[in-house]
Length: 526
Figure 1 (cartoon, helix red, strand yellow):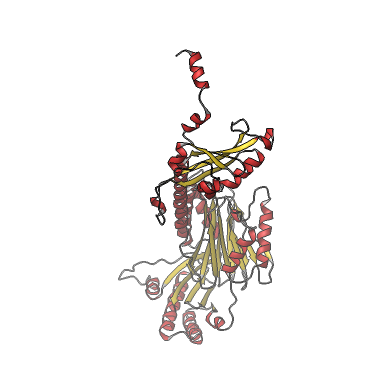
Figure 2: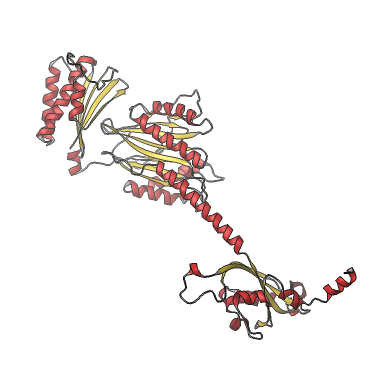
């Protein structure tokens, strides 16, 4: 066909013919009442037949359902187009009253309202003035595929995030251990809305003889890899804690392990041990933020005098341990940087803010924990994980004061020391109203421990008895650093059975090195 004839053919197309064959849903109204002037076949296929000349509010209920009538008023009044994006539309004839949503045939459409000018063409009439608008053209584009693809992507992201958070939480303690002498509470809050959880963790580990290890750490970076490294470090901390080493030695071991796990991952950590017999909290920090302590008088200060390099750096700067007398009524807070760090602000300001919140927080650890989180006002979309561990050393008053008791005896002299230790133990346990069977077991344990110290240890030696509301603890300390081991004695051995005897009658036993020697201990459940 010659080009001239083709151009003539194109020029003869009417606007109505063009709209009739358009794939979009199209309706045209006229006047301020939006009387229906035209609908194309695509519109009828979705919404059903429509009668012309009737106001839109009466004949086009679907536009009212999606809030389009007020927009059409604005378009007619101002001459500017308006858009409503991705509204769900039930197809005509596919639904009945009470039909389940899942069974209805539906799609998603983006509706555009544009003014129709006096010359009969659609377009922005704002430049021509309100007098140039004669009607409104509504057309809807099917965006079902895009909406469904977006929904699938969001669901996939939700599942991935849920899996990552589940992994992270599964690597944290499912239930905190509750020491006799401390009250503890913890909280983990995942950060961000994506699947990139972090490597924050905490733990509470009972070490025996009433001592408790408290740990908090943060693996740098995000994602499943950070969470996996965190899980390995947490498991290693629990293993190293059983060795009953000083905090700085535990961190030195962790530093070497972190290098082996992944040399590209850096982690920070605080490891602390509470000893109720000495009334001391010993701690060491590997690149982590300093714990906060509120003493019984209400003063809050930082534990920032035992700092060392982060784990995994392999630096030559050794870790050190610090100690703090922890009096009844004291509260200690361990936390990760997600709680105090804000973009564009000095992190010291966040720590000071947390300290101010701790100064005004009262009540049990759960209440203190919630108060601190509330005070720090975490953004809704905070992008860093938060771990928070709160411990409180309660005052024992009233009946509790009769349950928590301590007695000690310096073991001076020769072989008569064993008899004196047995008599002391029997008298103390009787005054504590310990049952006869348990009293006999306690005396036997003291006899074996003292005999072992006299044979293999060195002066000075000391016996200490502790009772809590759950257990009786026996400790014997001396100045020798050779710890006893549980072994099977041969029939002709003259010694080596003392530890085996204690292990058979006590619920648990152990030993640890001290600054001046060693301490051997055992526990009996009440």
